Image (cartoon, rainbow, N blue to C red; front, side, top):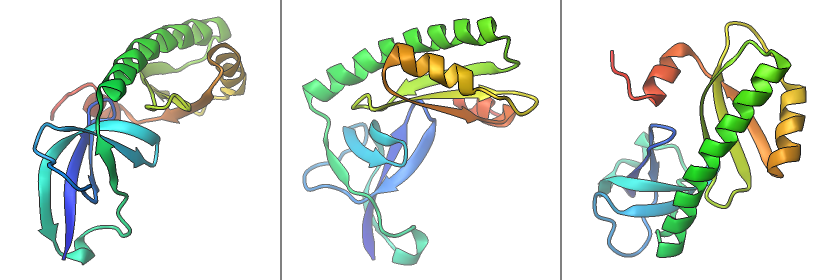
Length: 159
């Protein structure tokens, strides 16, 4: 048996499981974790509970800490910066005449990476776009092509 806590990420619209940190992790508590995307802020969706060890991919990453006021301010600033980065990327996409539709954009909590999700019918050569974005944003750029069903999920659609 191992203890897990369910953490929900709003921008990515995903629920992932982590090893709980010491202290109270009630439902709705904001926490900082290290996910495969980088350092992120999520919300506890399922309080810590014991489950069978074979039911979870091991090893579980731990919840690093309960979010501090500084983390919350950084998260808010990242939301604003992500909107600006998305607008910038849309202008570059139209200038380069790329056949892609940008869905959303998110910064990791420590701003080490910015992730753009997009849909496209065909494979896109976006090397020039990445270069332009890296020059302007001065951070690591990740472009992810997603399907139309994933787009609907990210935008909160059902069915």
